[in-house]
Image 1 (cartoon, rainbow, N blue to C red):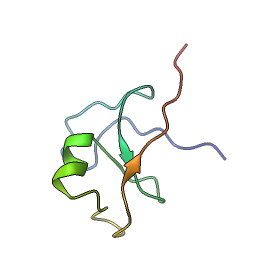
Image 2: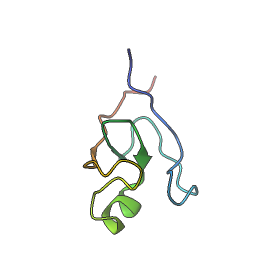
Image 3: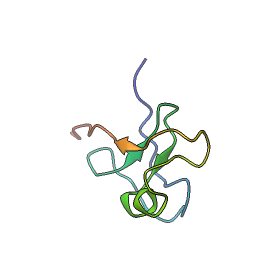
Image 4: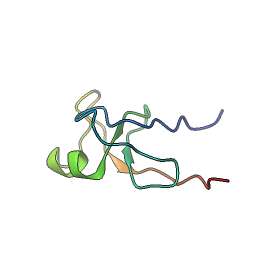
Length: 60
């Protein structure tokens, strides 16, 4: 199963998150922009898990 590459920050809903750009995710694939993740001290508000850098996917 492939990692879902969500394109919108779940907190601010304004930041576009391209597959080859920076983003933060938890183990449930909740996705946030870097600024929102830092504002939340890298803790997912949905599950309480750690937010870590999302792997980048090459675009063609």
